[in-house]
Length: 368
Image 1 (spheres, one colour):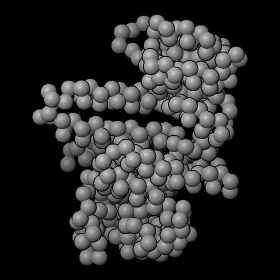
Image 2 (spheres, rainbow, N blue to C red):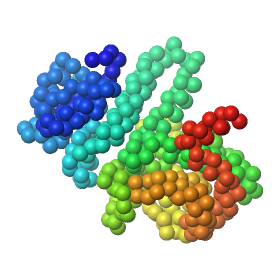
Image 3 (cartoon, rainbow, N blue to C red):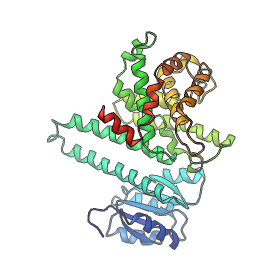
Image 4 (cartoon, one colour):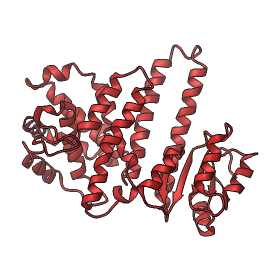
């Protein structure tokens, strides 16, 4: 075993799953496989891993019973646990999350997705430990704490947002692009008589950071819906709409535990209103016109443009011109007509921003 590798315990009563999991993860991690919850608890007496992949459906002691035991002991309660399961239903998923699981991965799992989800969770755990160390050494780090906290917050925000995107079959490129689109629109609004006064009062960096969490509620939506390659049924669409309410609940829970409200207040606005529509046909509250906060009206354009111009599980990307035409047709229906006019005036910048995932384009920008 190579020094420096993170340790993962893979628990599953299926020999095939153990073999596939081991083959997938062993190039990057120290992997220990075991076929029961009882065996896991025995090994944990002497060895603590960085993460546990735990099958739900096991004879004897199932995954739910096992995680209850883990969370009851101080020595093991902080080990991140990801459930592996073939039970593709919301009730089972919510039960596991309420017991302390960090995530759900449905079997048969995709090896690349498994690796990505593990990477994200290990990164989050690493950052949490860094934060603890920072607090323990606050006096020593007082001269650099502001810079460190800002960098840590930004990294944490991006990690959480990217975790949501992993569940949606996407990558962090969506976050970067929508943030860039928002920045383009904010700059245009600063030169617009109608919106200039309001936008100049905003903390631009805080707005852009908080916008990253607009879809945080998707963490509660089933993989089978987020990654569905075809059109959603009516019931599936109703379920995916619940991500807004769940996202609001997440933000409210965080607000209850901190005195720093400005960032969270903005994040809450983005979460709650980016699916509202100018004509009142949006969700979750059916807000209409200027009832929709400006932040939500802006994010609606940025988010829809990226959805249109990017590959998604259910469709291929539209061209830039097609995306612009679709948004233009929805002027006064989905979108604030004044904001559509502003968008059209800077749409060429959107086209450039949409190439942020293209290495050749990034190289061109660096040379300018």
